Image (cartoon, rainbow, N blue to C red; front, side):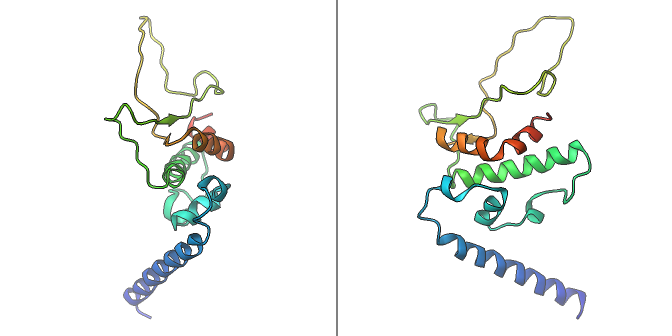
Amino acid sequence: MEKEKALERLTSLENEAKQLRKIIESGDSDKPITERVKSKHDVFRIAGLTQEDVLPYKDPVNKRQAYLNACAFLDLMNEVMNEGWVPDYTNSNQPKWNLWFDNYTPGSGFSSTDFVYWYTRTGVGSRFCFKTKELGTHAWEYFKDEFNKFLIK
């Protein structure tokens, strides 16, 4: 088989697999998302993707690669958990739920020290914003390890 034909066949099989995953998932769509998402496998299945489609490193060998995988996974998980809802940051009346990370150690976030004291505050929310408190709590409960990799713990 020629390389070009093999690539065409592979693309066709991948597209067919994605459609089959959607058919399988549609049988559970009457359940709340919190009942359908309990593992990383569930997130990939609902999205119709595989780990290879999403994660940049198949087998991360250092903290940076684990962090990048966590970012990619958490971004997808957030999209799946919100079921298409996208926060409108121009609408201050729209409720938005962000996780508050208070169990990390000093130096694990974005921080810096210098010789001058500055007080800063931001009103910018987390990239991982949920449409309900329940969704954010569920995400933390089931994907705490991924969030900790993201926080460079």
